[in-house]
Amino acid sequence: MSKDNVDSRLSSFDSRMHYSVEALSQELQGVRTSRASIGLLDPIKVDMYGSFIPIQQVGTVSAPDARTLVIQVWDRNSVKAVEKAIRDSELGLNPSVDGQTIRIPMPTLTEERRQELSKVAAKYAEESKVAVRNVRRDAMDWVKKSQKSGELTEDEEHRLADEIQKLTDGHIKDIDVMLEKKQKDIMAV
Image 1 (tube, rainbow, N blue to C red):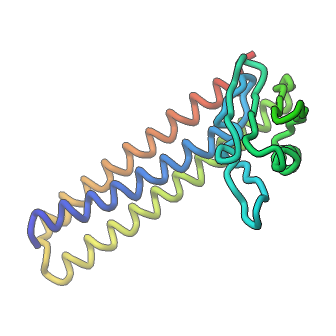
Image 2: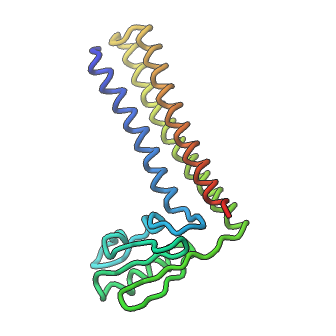
Image 3: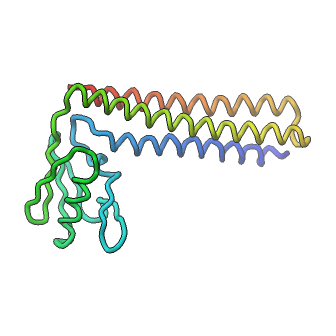
């Protein structure tokens, strides 16, 4: 098997692992900390025009201070739909409407709620680790099949297995760092 083909496959597996880490990053933005963050609203979809539209596509989202989010809705007719989507989102937010502006005060988090959110973040991280390990399994299966079919020598098989493990370890470490940072943010007073 050519070096370019092997490098291409390794790059493909690395990309898939990286995608799992990026997906975790997006999920963790939706886990609320004590500070207002526009990323908190990323998972919310608004039921408009017969489809579900990301909240960022119906208005301008900003965080004027650490305790408030503000959405300036572009279409006056969609304000109620945006408010409903926020209330129904299970994020525990209570928006107030003023014309085309929706203000969302960030409620203070109790210690119990902080612990629950920390567990949610840990669950997301574990799901991401499982996804990375699944990619690792696919990569190892490819290496073993290639070696059995004679495309790779045993030495190449061992070298690729080591490289795949290093990729996996690196992405798992990235996940652990992201989780630790998010849990510190959640538990900060």
